[in-house]
Image (cartoon, rainbow, N blue to C red; front, side, top):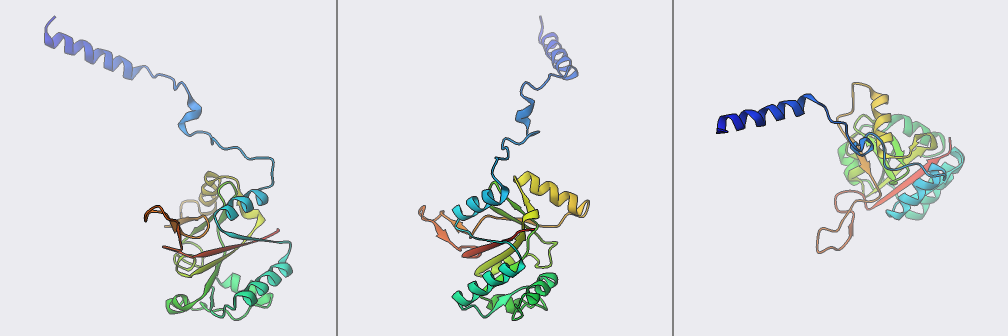
Length: 216
């Protein structure tokens, strides 16, 4: 058998193999299904456990009155005077419960640079990983949750999803073909252990993250 005949036989085998599709032996391993399954516990409890393990500070509020009281207590304890909030709807909600001394109405970057804390909403909360999902489509923009030394996020229980893939699915359904140019996943304060394997908090983002979850 010469070289050309051997080559032709090999090519014939390749063509036949390509024409006959081979079934995937383990179809579930191809990412069609999540390997994580929701537990019996409530998503609120699951999120709180995961979030606090990541050094996040979690506060559950039964209603807006309790939310107002918890925020007032936090501000009194910390002594914060410069609190930044760009979101018009959120500013109106906070003003309605007595919080009127907020900067950021005009989106002035200098006010953000000088603030002691920032307040935003979010897109969704991922219970399994204790993650806050935010996007550039929010009124708060790209920088509000990152540049302030303390980030306060106010969310509601109907924003809870189990896994990250569920959060992404909800974002896609919400915005359709006009997906935000940036989707952010924040799991507690920013931190790194790249320098001599020592954990450092607040390297490229807030040193503290508060999540106020309003029952809804």
